[in-house]
Amino acid sequence: MTDKQKLPSEKASARGEVDDFLRKVAAIKPSGKASGARGRLIFAMDATASRQPTWDRATHIQAEMFQETAVLGGLDVQLVFYRGFGECKASKWHSEPKGLLKAMTSVFCLAGKTQIERVLKHAASETKARKVNALVFVGDAMEEDIDALGHLAGQLGLLGLPCFIFHEGGDPIARRAFEQIARLSGGACCSFDAGSARQLRDLLSAVAVYAAGGRKALADFSRRRGGAALQLTHQLR
Image (cartoon, rainbow, N blue to C red; front, side, top):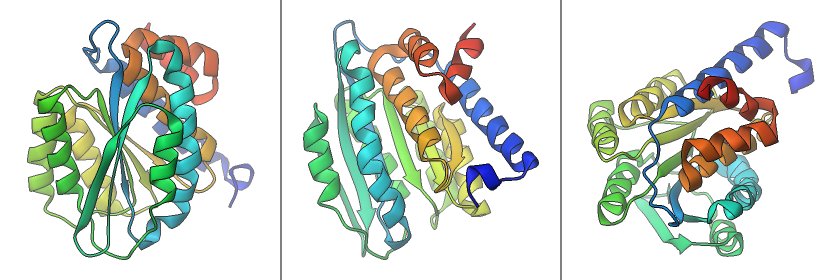
């Protein structure tokens, strides 16, 4: 079912969820990025078998994240992914879209269980070494101990590293887990599907702008972009 075919109640629900996500982003404390420093964002993805369609879309979306942050002093992005039998890898930090795009297109999806705990531990280690302004995670499932994930998310919150989670599909177990991880880390969670690529692009770009320039930059981006991101302007006021 396309966006045009969705029932009014479904559209209203989707708009309400986006508004709620944007309210949470707007309420987050400034990123603490040093003046003149480049923002740093970890882009983590579930690369198990069910993720292939979203992975392909994300390779195009991430390039726009870079474009939106260039005027803010730039954004360094690290790709993290897990797949297969216990494989979880992190790329080097990329300062321009070409390098990250190459890293993402070299990855193919393999069946396996989720490894979100390893992603959160890695993010904590990275930000302890050098401040990371935001963690983005895109996934559709959770097959781990929610209490352990919640503990790690709380640690990220104490470190000032919010998790912005984008949930694909309708798995209620994953949804509850992702909402709790986002809440405990001080971030936000939002759903998306195959028909909401533009919405995902705008929201990911908004998070990237936040990581690169803080809340003021996020407000400016919202006014320029319009659509879902425009709601931020009202929330920041």
